[in-house]
Length: 101
Image (tube, rainbow, N blue to C red; front, side):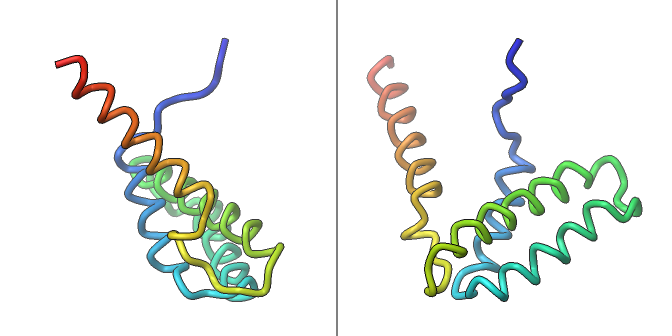
């Protein structure tokens, strides 16, 4: 049985918040933000309703930090292969949906 799921709107919103905040950051800045997100996700004060968003934010900070580890530049969603892949997938789904109508 697969443990994959379609991301919720709450997760998408958390990713967007992180990407907006990370834009222009270098690896060290993103790493500090990632550590803060880890503490927030694990400190136990987040209620269940916000826990999913806190985990999604932490995971996105980790992904962005890993992305920045390989180069000396700053983060930009326009050059992030993962983000661009998501946008392409959304466009393809919308196009397929429009053809079915």
